[in-house]
Image (tube, rainbow, N blue to C red; front, side):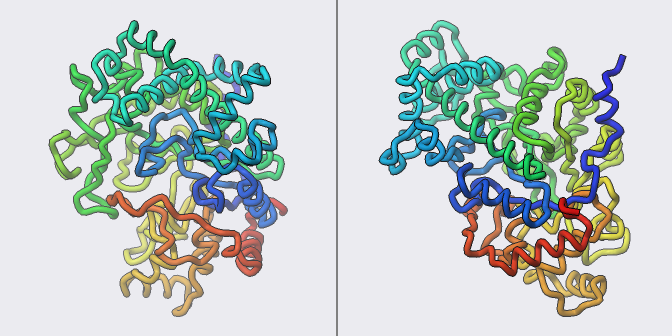
Amino acid sequence: MQEPCEEAKKTDPPVRSRQAGVLLHISSLPSGNLGQDAYQFVDFLAASGASVWQTLPINMPHADQSPYQCLSAFAGNTAFISLPLLMQAGLLAESDLSLEHEQALGLAYQQSVKKSDLAAFNQFCDAHQYWLNDFALYCVLRQHFHLASWHAWDEPYKNRDRDALQAFQINHATAIATIKFNQYLFFKQWDKLKSYANAKQVSLFGDLPIFVAYDSADVWAKPHLFKLDDNNAMTVVAGVPPDYFSETGQRWGNPHYRWEAMQDDHYAWWVARMRTQSTLFDLVRIDHFRGLEAAWEIPTEEETAMNGHWVSAPGDALLAAIDAQCLPIDLVAEDLGIITPAVNALRLKYNMPGMKILQFAFGGDQSNPYLPQNIEENSVVYTGTHDNNTTLGWYAQADEQTKNHLHQYLNNHEPKMPNAFIQLAFSTAAKLAIIPMQDILALDGKSRMNTPGTIVGNWAWRFIWDQLSDQHQAQFKQAVHQAGRSSHD
């Protein structure tokens, strides 16, 4: 017999009223962490009538800081832990705030041990044992091998020899426990922020990369779930074919899933991953959703993504396994790029909103699905995303055909940008409209978050409160209210 929540998930729309939200990653807050600025940002949203805060993935990135290439699909980014909040909790002294971040976190663990205040921490470890033990061991081993990828570690550790790992854990017990404690601190601070946001009628909207990094605890701990050869090396990598963003496609370099192995244990890794997301977020976007129907596989010897091919994926079975868990989270499909009828059918079967980007709407014909009049209700509309230029930057670089089309649409040949674009997004039928913080602040292309296909100069943008003028706040609040998207209505 089907559980009631299963049926509800398929029939109730994830966004049940007209809402507005803002896209801002945690790293883009003035402090870049979960401290006072995060709470102040929630207050800004609530005061504006906006009811959704969307972030990028909050996992631990590699050195390039990309939140889409992380050390774990589960672990939170400990750089987001607020040291002042730890001081308020009695885990740090004021003098500790000037220490290097990881050193300060180590002191917080030592202080908890001294206080014998580890009951909640032990409960956390039990609740997250599916991934936490392997992740902590992986992190300490990675430090031991001078940050080398796990594939370059000594053979016993690379191949997870049981005796070698057991001896290593005994010899590095404190370092491993500290890694676990850091995760406990991250999840605890996040939970408090989420509770605060929800109490202010603000939902947290996360982002789930469909693939994981090869150098990650996930691939090291469970190599049988990924398409690797007998030496645990990749033979194919993920990406997308040539598209709007790149003439040669995008070669992401992530390993592909061995779906038949995942099916054998009823997609336990994915289910555990989504269960973790459900403790962190109210909604979550599945990045590159079309990869659940078919994914672009590129031979490792290819330098670009041009010479790949599509390989089918069991998205229906996977989503059914997740759906059966009745998790308290709603899913959104990132369905940009090459979308087939089969991908649309999969999204619609699970009643997941798709994404519409206004920067893609103009310069073509009336059949463009991103044109405001073509945007259906069960959608999330954006002026642009983290992969787009800011609206001011886009408008400055747009060709004459695109600008003329937009001007005709707005019936205004000198529109005030980006406000005109924000109002246009809010005017659509889409139940949820998300505006990047850069557009609220009317910033140009110098404040772009990411340029796909490049590896330098991304993910570093951060705003300061002085940029959010009274005028910016009033304009945004008015736009939210006039479009009937205010949580105050």
